[in-house]
Image (cartoon, rainbow, N blue to C red; front, side):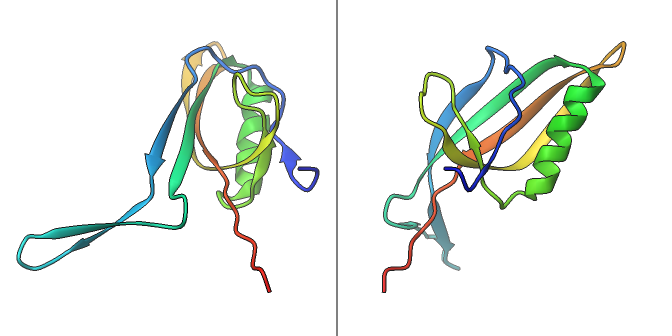
Length: 120
């Protein structure tokens, strides 16, 4: 895991939650029928909706710069709640909400990164 940058250690909110979703390709036919096909060998994504509450301008800027630098495609290391080992994640979307007095809440969608190895 040493090849990945580490998500800044800014405490997350208890409102952080996770979900699992299958990666499925849907083919729609002209007659109204739909065929669904699982993608990949596992095809299961673990997605975390991570919240940071009452961030000051410095912490908000730190997280925004971190996610911007990783461009939604470069994995980074993060230890999810109730886990003991860091795993690679990507973040393609995040949003902030101003609270007033210079504070913000930030919500980011972190998706567990799965990578494939090409075996010769």
